[in-house]
Image: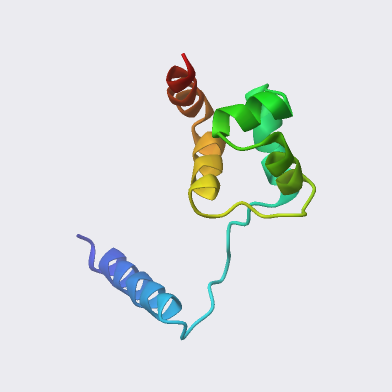
Length: 99
């Protein structure tokens, strides 16, 4: 490995450790904002009811996320990120469970 790249990687690992220990703040965070959640749903081509059913949450819960009254947590956040990054694969997998 190129020594310069190794130094950069080692520095990144040290920074990650400091962030996880709370010694340093992350320079950026990927927030799931209400508009981002709505955008993920709209790009999927599904209505709120269809998308909520796909994620196995109530329509009310999805509306609360999209209107900033609540924030998705844990598995819901992870699932939304998966649908955002790999929509076709995620929708295929989730719809297969419904068939």
